[in-house]
Length: 169
Image 1 (spheres, rainbow, N blue to C red):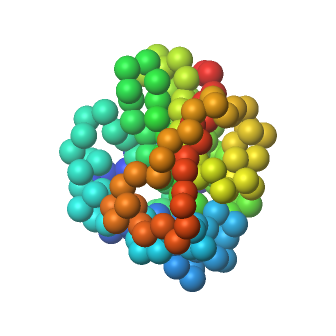
Image 2 (image 1 turned 90 degrees about the horizontal axis):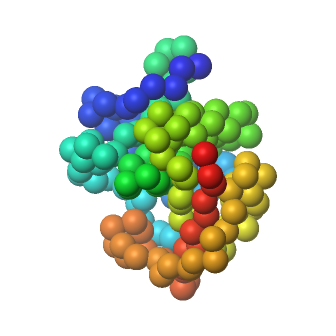
């Protein structure tokens, strides 16, 4: 299963994948859902177009033999750090190694771009997800951020905050 850089032609499929991984009833088929924490959508095609127009952003995609996108991850180079976000795996295919493969490829990408670490933000209430990242070497920096982008990233159903995690590469 190849992992390659996504292109603007992938926007419709990425939009479906990301939203199905995070929100709505489909997301509840996997363990990474945010449906109980946030309503609305995670992303739309306009936001994805913005990502592809930013030269510091790359989106990696994991595809099956037929070219269907099963997983993706957003990567943004910020000086000597790589920010990782919008990490998505089809809810019905979670726990099959797709996420682990994407995370490993993100680490290769970071090294190729001479980034000294990978950073990410995770909703603090997502204890199982935080534990998954910790098992892969990511640690909580101690920094806590407010959940921003209300309306842009969904409508919170409760007060949310983000923790910053990082891993040296």
